[in-house]
Length: 49
Image (cartoon, rainbow, N blue to C red; front, side, top):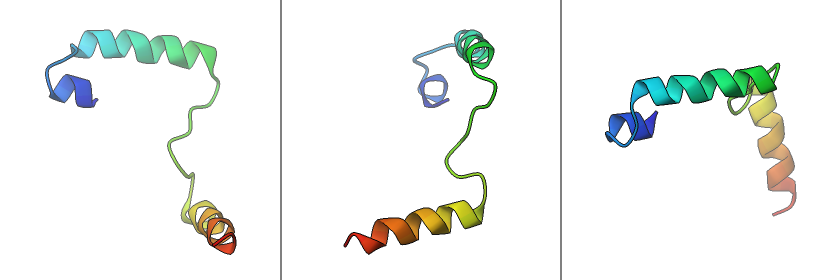
């Protein structure tokens, strides 16, 4: 997305890449799926400090 905004890539190129990626993977996750997941990860991370 950032490459499109900066003018480095055309939206059509990104679209082709996204379609290819979705063919290879049934599920694509973006960060955490919910707040609980994020909080659990943060708690585990802080225990090591």
